[in-house]
Length: 309
Image (cartoon, rainbow, N blue to C red; front, side):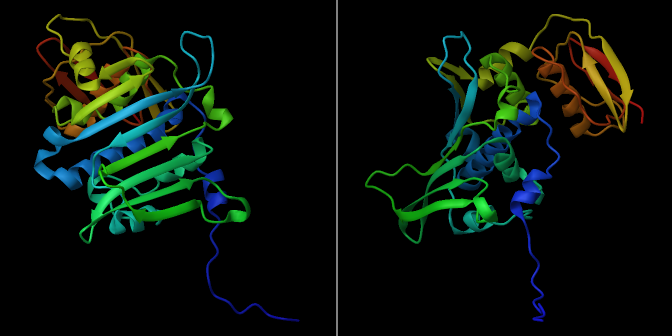
């Protein structure tokens, strides 16, 4: 009998994706979009540094299925940025699962797995400068048969005569179980994006950011300003419903402004979490993990949000 003496460790990416705790829900259906947008923010910061807000550009286009409905089902998203692109270092990080390259920014290196979990395919085109030349990289990213590499059809070549530095990520189509959970209304999608990146919007540290839905183009910074900033007092009702290892914060009516201050020992991050709830509940109900006691004090609203373990 032949004995296997190898000591290499086998890893099943398909199994990792299958076991990823990611139940279909409206927020999880949008999480891969959030990951792509976060990558765009980081790429713009890497290229433009302190000029990121002035020179950076992000465009998210909603891709819809063919339908006679007023709001046809969402088939996917196209995310475009003018960031640094998938150069050698970024390409190496992209190919490494659970990479530590973005730990300093709060990344865990697992966001790309959500692309594999929620979408049947992701197509990436990226142009970047390296070694005095402008190169173009393209590939598909999907769970492959027989647990082969998810990087399919990778091509690296010299870019054309007038290349545009940046990256395009096309998430399409949805895995069927997630498709039905994606919000259809463009305002709802806009609210979820802003709620997820509220720290950026609240500090106005956002490059040019446009959400496109067919003929409609929405500046998300303008959308944030018009929906969040208010001088009119509003009543906030908060209901806390303890659950297993978490509490659900439900805001039945909400208002928040540009200014936000934590007046307790709670961290600024926790305050931003609460603000995200206040903003997103204009469009939907948001559930968060454990939230410490925090007071939001603005000219138009003062509310205590407290959750207990």
